[in-house]
Length: 388
Ligand SMILES: Nc1nc2c(c(=O)[nH]1)N[C@H]1C(S)=C(S)[C@@H](COP(=O)(O)OP(=O)(O)OC[C@H]3O[C@@H](n4cnc5c(N)ncnc54)[C@H](O)[C@@H]3O)O[C@H]1N2
Ligand code: MOO
Image (tube, rainbow, N blue to C red):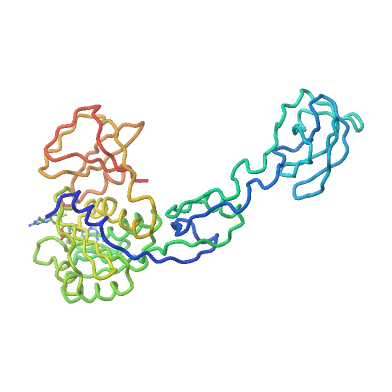
């Protein structure tokens, strides 16, 4: 049995070989950069208008209109003092432009332009290099690409980026009692829900599950199922059959497939029988079958590892400290991750903390950490892992 800190350290200390690939701009969302990206030109690359209106030379309330320039035009007009040209948002401003005035604040009298107010020097001009300068570092390696990130990379004229390959993740659930949702349930059966929750949690954080397998509590079947899915996995996640019951075959079946234990059992609640193993560059998490245990273990242990082998800067759920909204005593002799809800910067520990209870987790948005046999008084801060 290891402590939570020891388990997290063992996971984080694994040497992993990160593979990279080149991906198109329209297919790189959620991938982590394997290269730094710098701006190869100033952004904007020329002074341009922030408004539809008039580019003005000199500061006054009256100008003569001498022409027009639209977005994409590159005409080299040079304005003289007292002259204005019609201009549109994004269009390059002529040399000698003092300011741009939005059209709503102007009126025309023949070729004369009359302003409601004097422009301020530089007003409504987006300056060359105002956002980024040539050679400026835009993204560091390990940045996980967001929608806005894709926008910026595209704006820099880049159509392909070098990213870390995402891990191939497969999932095995074990248990004779399990049947698929949607099918009629017989006496003693329960619906298999862990694979859905785990695949959804992994998918939500950018790690789609490739293959799912449901296997009965039969040693041979579990052993051959593991062999089959391990071949195509970077990370294999199992649920159930990892405790000490007569039908808990997962650990032995992993060992007989050449998986080496990195740790087994963590002094925590829920998720005590958590197992983590490795076979060369393939990694295995065997999560306890109880629905809340398996999902909590996913968030606290599996997700940071997936982030690590995805080359991403984020390592698991974000952790914040929030004051608790009630007195709460953790009577367990094990440090606990409690189903909780954070609202208005306060955390409430929810009813229904049993490891089999997923209802409270479904109502909540966080796991709150409280040490064993500890009383926390209303208003005292506790650590919360936020589930988005
Ligand atoms: N003698 C002991 N018994 C148990 C111990 C122990 O230390 N000594 N630990 C308990 C703890 S803590 C946990 S957690 C469970 C975990 O056991 P397993 O990983 O072997 O899980 P199962 O027995 O297969 O299942 C437990 C529970 O969860 C339900 N389940 C399983 N898989 C699914 C699924 N895919 N979808 C929905 N529900 C699932 C299953 O029906 C059981 O009710 O062991 C304790 N026992
Ligand atoms: O570790 Mo178990 O998940 O306490 O029920």
